[in-house]
Image (cartoon, rainbow, N blue to C red; front, side):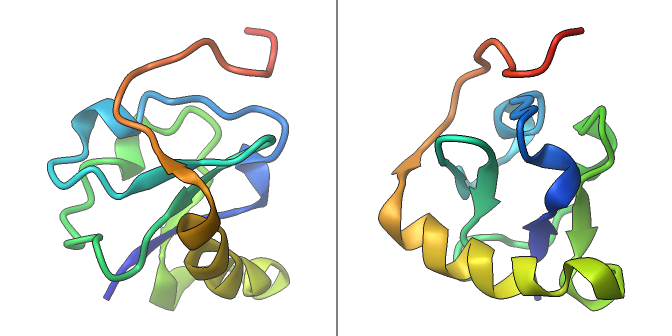
Length: 92
């Protein structure tokens, strides 16, 4: 099982979640982050760190954001891993 970054991350790209990830499974896209489904160990460390509540267990992704499950898998293959906190796109 894996966790999924969903729509609330789009345009924000907070990186609080990446620094707590023990397996470095976050990947950085231009407008949001993605979780690699084969690297995620389902530890849930990232969930409480997300200030916009964008991270869900794949079984609990809201219906309107189900397409983000496949998007995370696809985009994590096309983007670079991120392991350090960066300035978010959104204004605080």
